Length: 354
Image (tube, rainbow, N blue to C red; front, top):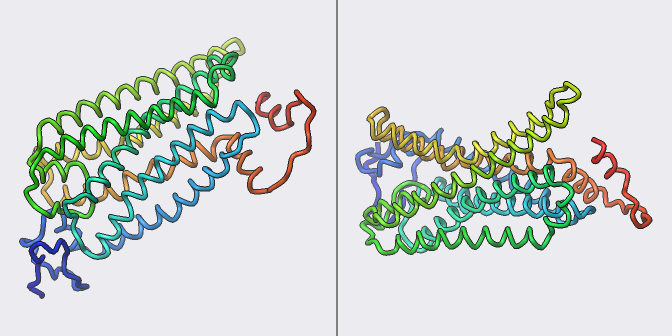
């Protein structure tokens, strides 16, 4: 057994392949479980690498396929979908590669500008993603419940203004939070763990009250406001669909299925937040020890947070008929025949009738 330990100020852990070669008492608590379990480290690296290799190309293909729209009514939906995919790809890029690098090289996160930038980008993309899902629900609500005025009011320009407003709001909120964080004094150069996040920064900066209070209040208001828009939009859509088939004594299974899937997707986006709150609560009550908490935090960062970004291009992209037609048009490289003015293509008539 080796007696090596972390060198002071190095920010890295010694390389070894021997199981249990690190004295646990000399390691930060966030690293004990992972360092003493090489198999777990390899599994996390494999899962994270698979997520990047599968999610990024799929999102890029859907993003490229929706760049061109063959119908004016599709453009707002495609713009919102591309914004969601952009948020997901940015989130994965600032989350998975740094974690993989630190896992492979057995390095812990260090306090500095890079950590602030990663935290800033991660919180900004998550914030914009929640607002984008609410905006997507509102767009579908307007399309179904106010279809007569949809094309004239939900224009491409107004959609772009709405998306830009979301990004400005998200960046402003996160900038104010980071500004409050910088008022604190760092207590250590090493934050511990393999990924930089807001909680680690707050702990290293002495838990600044203003920053913590601002983050909790602003994010809670944002989350519940987006949830309110989401629930109202899809409940109204379901009621309209149900009233449409009620005279025929039929049950609208498709509408019920759509509302359930989109509601499940919103819950999956909020799953990492509730997972972390649950782990913090269990630790404070003494139901779990510090090593289980560290393992849960690492699983939350590398696996749970990646579930919704992996499913977004499938649920909001490939599951959508218009997106599939756009991808088919891009992949087949077929040039559609010239249509007379005012004549709808055949696939448009199929969408309307179905």
